[in-house]
Length: 45
Image 1 (cartoon, rainbow, N blue to C red):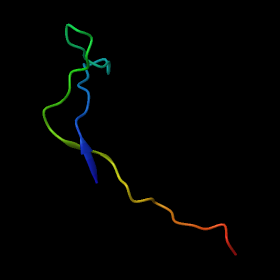
Image 2 (image 1 turned 30 degrees about the vertical axis):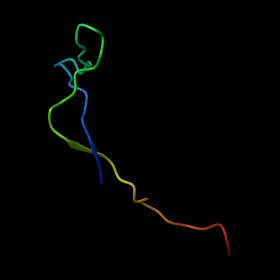
Image 3 (image 1 turned 60 degrees about the horizontal axis):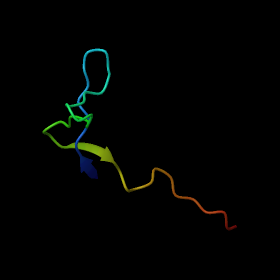
Image 4 (image 1 turned 90 degrees about the vertical axis):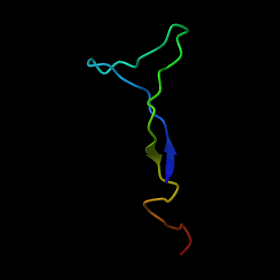
């Protein structure tokens, strides 16, 4: 699993920014990706 922080959002689902227009990140880590593909296939017969 790939873990990382997410951008905080307000009630209107807009991303929050600080005074320098940088996104405000959540303090917790979340699963943001999976390096394992859902499907493995081949074009060779």
